Amino acid sequence: MSDDLLNSDLGGVFDGLAGGESSQWAFGTGFEDPLAGVDTTVPDGVDRADLAAYCLMLGDDALIMSQRLAEWCSRAPDLEEDIALANMALDLLGQARLLLSRAAAADPAAVPALPEGSPVPAEDALAFFREAGEFRNVRLAEVANGDFAHIVVRLLLFSVARLALLERLRASTDQVLAAVAAKGVKEVTYHRDWAGRWFLTLAQGTEESRRRLVAALDALWPLHPETVTAHPLETSLAEVGVGVDPASVRDEVDAVLGQVLAVSGVDRPDRAPLAGVGGRTGRDGMHTEAFGRLLAEMQVVARAHPGGRW
Amino acid sequence: MTTTSADPAAREAAQERFDATIARGDRIEPRDWMPEDYRRTLVRQIAQHAHSEIIGMQPEGGWIGRAPSLRRKAILLAKVQDEAGHGLYLYSACETLGVSRAELTEMLLSGRQKYSSIFNYPALSYADVGTIGWLVDGAAICNQVPLCRTSYGPYGRAMIRICKEESFHQRQGYELLMTMMRGTDAQRAMVQESVDRFWWPSLMMFGPPDAASPNSARSMAWGVKRNSNDELRQKFVDMTVPQADVLGVRLPDPDLRWNAERGHYDFGEPDWEEFARVVGGDGPCNAQRMAHRRAAHEDGAWVREAATAFAEKSARGGSR
Image: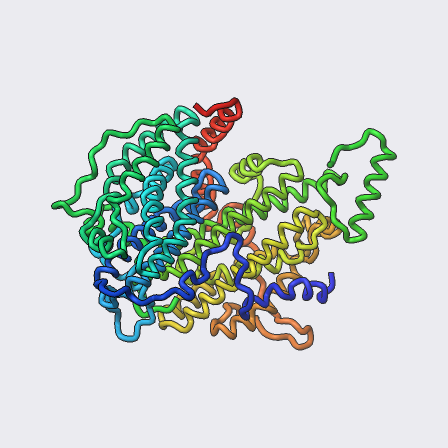
């Protein structure tokens, strides 16, 4: 084969190094800016620190759930499910980035201080330089992964509650939250469908799959109530039209889960909610032992290079 | 397909049509007659490529959880996901030759089919994510772009899509390294250390020297393979040296220098004994990569069984 032919074959492919076309991911990454043209001013009468804390709650849920989903990468039962799990991790990571950035914009004091001149963007300072007690995610997002049934049940419980919440959040008076919710509804609708389909499949598949599914449901059910229990901050932001009170979606969430359980022929577990510590749970910054290990992994490189550029 | 006609004259005519198609540079399609050796060679090559994509998810995938910025985490996750997708396209191309994905997976797990030996090297720092993109994906692109015009239609078409995505992967790797080189001294040292480790294994990705490459000649005659190992290796070096200069890293080869007479860079000889050891199973990560793949496959067996059982129940009418 002549060198010329090889050169023309390679022509164009290496042009990428110099910039140019950026739409060549197989599945898309949601890297486009969904906030283009959105009014980013904080609505009148809203406390900036409260808005930031609320954004952190929703953003941390997405970030930590994404971290757990991504652990499945290269480990799923089949390539199709590997791709699906990565897709959902990417969706939630995208939501997290928008929400963490919104938190930083609403209240710069919420962002951990880094050494003078550090190039670390605010979203990364929040993700990588907060301590466990400063994260506001529900504990359902953080507990360690188990088998495939475990991730199916976790996603079902998580996405049913998040979808109900995001659907209402589309009407937020905060235009950024409304835009994030509008984007998120489409994504989480797919997550819920995926989890619901697998829930039914595992429930009705084999004896083993049913046994594993019921065990996962039993293990995770105590973490479910936290996703539909209002933190005082959520209640107060709901009152001013910015947030959504998770207790207000409890009936809907309950009905959807009831439907999935009924179709699958699985009983609702009779399990008490997982206790908090001194009444405090994930939204208050009180987490599980597993969460410290998750953060240790997630933050290790960023923290080793507080002045690093990535 | 490859059914051999009992009639020698008909078989000869089929062989002539096949030879003429190859000679014209046209594509062989799944329903066309093809020699059994051609089919077997393609299955071996496409499967090895598919397995490489799947095993190749591991070294980088191990860094998703530790990605040092959310943007890099998203890029890396998307990249590793793309590799799963490439595996899917290639297994599908292979299935058009009459081998199922389950059979191919079994051949990977039993060691009867191989994957690119580059993935038997460890990814030890976040700079490796960049270096794998720049050098490993770069070398893969050199190998793969000519395959877009390979003689077997489904393979060539899969490669067109894969190459476009791979070039994006290469760019993200190079861009990561460029960004790190603008960062701290520790980051620059991390990049150099990573390039030092991956340079020679990248050159080995083109396979042994032409004189020692047993399958090359026939594959080239069939138009399955389109350039020799040494041609592609030279091309890769020629393209990469200026990129290393722009990046500000040193390539760890004292013999590397421009040869004006040849119009190419001269470079040193990779350690082919090391190459043989790694291909033979004794690289730093061979056992680990296979154990990871086997564990994922075995841990997922009950899920695949459940999906099959559920589909059968549903097909019989009513899922309850």
